[in-house]
Length: 150
Image 1 (cartoon, rainbow, N blue to C red):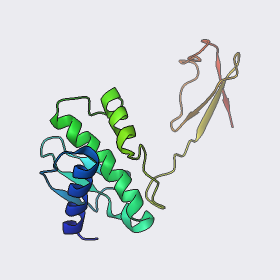
Image 2: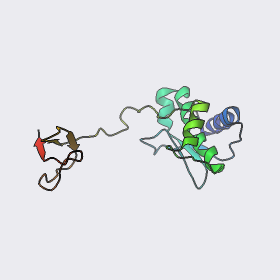
Image 3: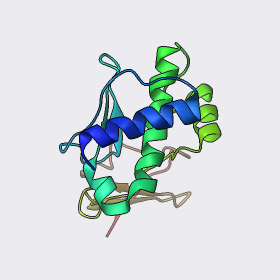
Image 4: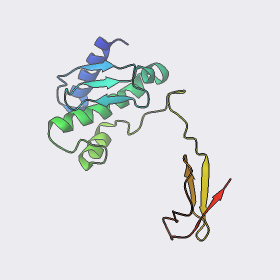
């Protein structure tokens, strides 16, 4: 799929599902790594990750387009366009957009926790990337003493 076809697809989905015109640019951005798409607040353009289309096909791309168009139309209407807003969640559910995109193999870093701690009283476990001084910190739940475990 080239950018001209992408632009046409976004305009079609906007008219069909939202009943509103998409009057800005839709394009692929090869630099996107951890997300399927991105709505630009200042320019109102939308960028998409080409790898999601290549890996998962047009159905995945359509879900991402609907998601980004929710941001687009709500922002232009001065309604809640952020992920946590009720307006966004409601509209996303109405149009059937995807809340999260699938993970492209080899794109996201795996979290590597090296240090593990446990509360001596309530047994709550904590994983950390960086080592922490257990004499200065206590359990966040019960304020018990932390113990380093391997």
